Image (tube, rainbow, N blue to C red):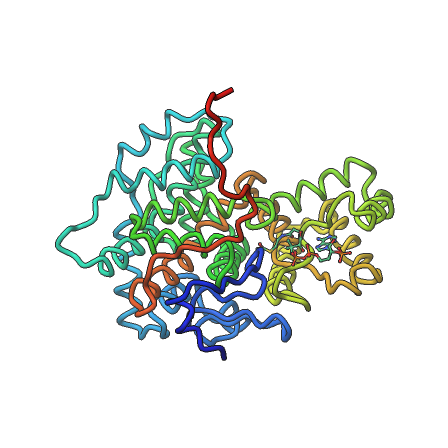
Length: 402
Ligand code: ACO
């Protein structure tokens, strides 16, 4: 450990670490990515155990509170989430102002940022209490907002939440129910969505979480901090990768399917393109979430009778070839969570542009767990990175300006 106390006073030493490859920006007890062991834990519990034995709201309560809630505490948590699933009627008027072909992530950033204007914070509460309250509101409203964005793009009437259903089943119903026929979400689809939510709920100091923490350090409104997180998540090198992965598979299909793989791999090796859904900054062995989602994907495909789906077959073959290829072996490139999550979502009927929005529903929990941890810690101070200045030395304007 290095004693940095002197640095605060002198300000002479600045580390330069593009992309934060080896700089810890905070201390956190929420989750841990052990890249060497290929292990992910939430509050110490392995992701495999949580995905197998808990539902998403239990995991949300664990991440926010630090411990698994008891039965009574969990009932209270669920009922408080259910209490907030509706959104203000005026939000739908705002929705009507967007183009119907706008990307759902663009709509979501706008709607979430605007929630600050619909749900003013209670000035009688402390900043920490305001953020704890906002966490419940946001976790409850995210599925409603995402489903609203989808239905708007389809020109369908909005669907109210059905609070008798589980969090995942309610989301599917809000997405796909139509007034003309009864809609019953398939149990396999509910299970797959719930697992996707658990796997995406938290991932320590990723780009969007760091964005949200940075906003919180400035004292930003909690809804606006989440809007910033959603904006960051939309990037194709981060949350947008699931959408890009499926688009990659679709373009491979259009180029000839399995026959097109060798040429694609050649282009990857020539650095003309990347195999999206492979590689990770921290995991240098298999991403544990990828293994779980891969199994869920196989189960769902069987359940829905989609074994012959050409995109699925293509993904299997592409993964097999890449895992046997020296280029990928030498660079420790394995499938990440995004390789299969797109196929799962597509099988459920979720349109590709909505994939990252679904990721955002889940990650809202992690954003709040991390942000609230910062606000409640002794480490809270305005985040203000330094730079290595590479511009002109001091100079002065000429007598006459050009
Ligand atoms: N396809 C082909 N080559 C790759 C890939 C890939 N997906 N990922 C890394 N490489 C290669 C690089 O070309 C580089 O090769 P070189 O040493 O010959 O120059 C080497 O592996 C190291 O790559 P970096 O970009 O330095 O690794 P980094 O840790 O910065 O990248 C990243 C991580 C951005 C995720 C990268 O693996 C990537 O672009 N993957 C595809 C996009 C993706 O799937 N993103 C989702 C991440 S998970 C998430 O956000 C939920």
